[in-house]
Image 1 (cartoon, rainbow, N blue to C red):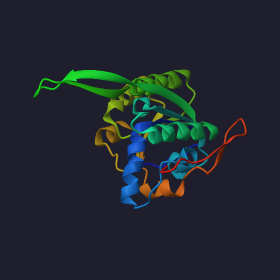
Image 2 (image 1 turned 45 degrees about the vertical axis):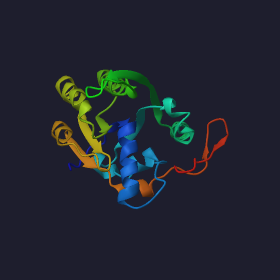
Image 3 (image 1 turned 90 degrees about the vertical axis):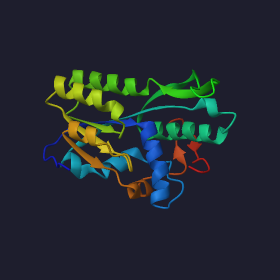
Length: 218
């Protein structure tokens, strides 16, 4: 872990589903249920020493998709995702919401058609938006919160085209990736216990004055 000693404008880009599955794992690891309401701003600020004294956390961008295809089978889960996005937006997190798309394939063993849904455009949206930010010269340090190797090309491109910008990877609990660590200028791991310490309030007050309650199980 590398500690910076310069004041930096820090922007954070979060891979929403990578974080979500990390939280599920943390619920098992730290034996604490209902951790699916993490306060991203508080969580990241708790690692402020990594970014350097006087570092400014300018913006947090959250990239995800709502699993609407599960509405009939598991409406509680869909509602939980939607409620959490509302809560994040109320805490000044910028949302980038893509979609799941249905994909048909043929089973190579039985020949039957298989229907499944895949998250589409989230990875591309994160990478493209990151390149736009770097092109505008708006930040000194860009943090990727993910352990997904799909973001390796974005890191390589950013290092090649914008060498003056420091690139950091914050690995969600149980999501370490050696390739991303090698590509980043510095990195750190988010501990499962930090999810326990940094949860959004219940209820969350929305911009229109409504009070959003934390869904059951979240």
